[in-house]
Image 1 (cartoon, helix red, strand yellow):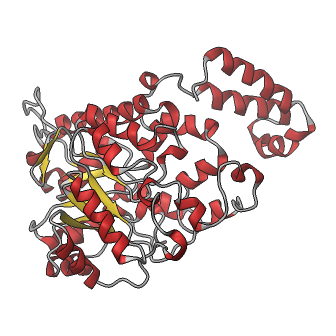
Image 2 (spheres, rainbow, N blue to C red):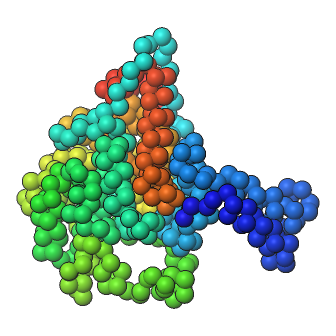
Image 3 (cartoon, rainbow, N blue to C red):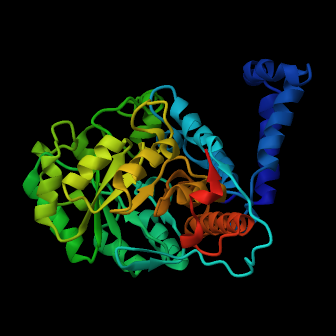
Length: 412
């Protein structure tokens, strides 16, 4: 929902009214150190929040501007579903702080008047190494969901990885993208159903299948506190139970959900072998964070790896995704491509991953912020900002294309 300036002024007036009421006492007390007059502090704080909001994608100067927008406008339960990390949310900070452990080494007097951001993976050429990570149920954040994402990916000519729990079918999203997708796979307890899904995906032209292996179990406290099965606000669009939730997911629309569930607790590396025997698509494993598991991937003929802690939603390991990347790359030793996600917010973040040896970087929350704010134009602006920032840092580092970004540009 876009908030015009006139509407913003009306909302300020309403918030001033609220701030003058007893309801604001608790918030006013919390803000008292700012001045000493509780109600005035509430008004000032609310004014600061609203003044910082953008009115259009073009006004955004960085991806965080979209985050500020969705924090105010998104339904609270939907916001926390998107924003949360595992346990006490510490991994959200860990993922961001990990980038500070790698320093860049700028070079001078290099002709960088022309910079090429394009990359190639599995025979497909993309205009940028900034890819779109799989995120489920995107219609939660905008009615056009994955279709808006696909059209934005087409505009930027970048890779889109589609989630198993997409709101729109792989056929519809592929048509909107106008180019092959990658498909992220959550295994189900019904192999026949999973096999049929894989064959359906392959028939649309998808070139890669990314098996997600990082969440055998997890603890998501913030969303649990909404008590979705009994919360009246949540019940407006959610019905209790697995079947009700997954009936709305396009890839499960015709499935017999009575005896079907999702999860990887019982899986072993044999499942990777089964996938390799089932499909001619490239098979990647998503969620690898150690050199040991990267080596096992090679033993099982995996075609690529996505280093990921599920955007802080997997385990509270205390290790950022970018910190895990070097040992995975060392184990792989250039034999297969390695992509990385989780915590990427700036062009400098992307550059550091590329300098370590990553083949590409996936973003998740930033494009959801853009989607939730302004739909397709919001996503397009997020990608534009990250690519602009990446181009700037490449010029600062004296690197004219992605191939020239090496470990010589970074220090640990």
